[in-house]
Length: 269
Image 1: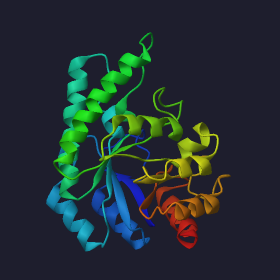
Image 2 (image 1 turned 30 degrees about the vertical axis):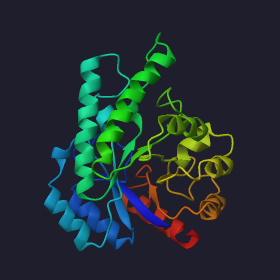
Image 3 (image 1 turned 135 degrees about the horizontal axis):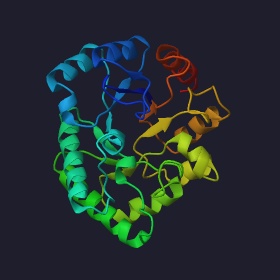
Image 4 (image 1 turned 180 degrees about the vertical axis):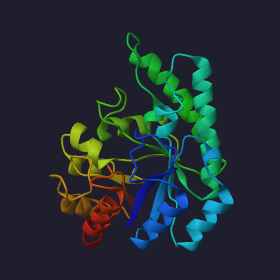
C-alpha cells in the first residue's frame, strides 16, 4: 500500500479537510520530504491549477496524484447532484465532468463525496436517489471515455443524510452497475456509521479502489482510539494494495500533523 496526503490550494476554505492549505509547490515539496507516496488534490474548479506546472512538480518530487476530490464543489461552489433546482444540478454535473477531464491528465480518479448532495427536507428519498443516479451514471459514462474511475465515499450523518455507511454504499455501487464506479471508504466516517469497520471492509473488498485514513477525532492516525493495525491487516487480507490517504485536521499544526501520520503509518504498512 501507498500513503497519500490530502492538500488544497491556498484559497481553499477551512471546510476542505486537508492537511496542507497553501501554495501547491510548497505542499508537494513537503509531502515528498516527509516520504509520502502521493498527494490528493482538493479542487473546486480545474482553473485553480496550472496543469503543466503541477505535472512537473509531481514528477520532480517523485510523487503520484491518485485522486482529485470534489468536496469543495459542494461546500464552496454550492453545487451538488441531488439539488431540486435543475440548473444547479446541471452545473454540478458539468463541474464534475471538468474535474474528470483534469484528472485524466494525471491518470487520476475522482472522488464523489459531499458533491452528491443531501435529501432535501420534505422530499422522498426515491425521487432524490433518482436524481443522483441520473447524475452519477452520466458522469460515469463520460469518465469511461477518459479511463477515470468515480469513487463513491460514504459520509457520516452529521455532514449528509444520504449514503452514510459503507454497507449502504455497497448496495448503491452495485445498483449503479458501472465498472468505473467504485467505493472509497473513509475510516473516520466508518467509525461513526458502520457497526464494524473490519467487517464492512471485508464485505466491500471487491469494490474498494481508494481509502481515506483519519483517527476517531479526525486527527492523525495514532492520536485517537482506532485500531489501525487491525484495519491495515484486514486491508492486506482482502488484497488491497492501493493508496491510503491521510485526510485529517491540521492539528496541532500542518507540518506536525503530516509528520505524525506518516511516522505512525509507515511501520504498519
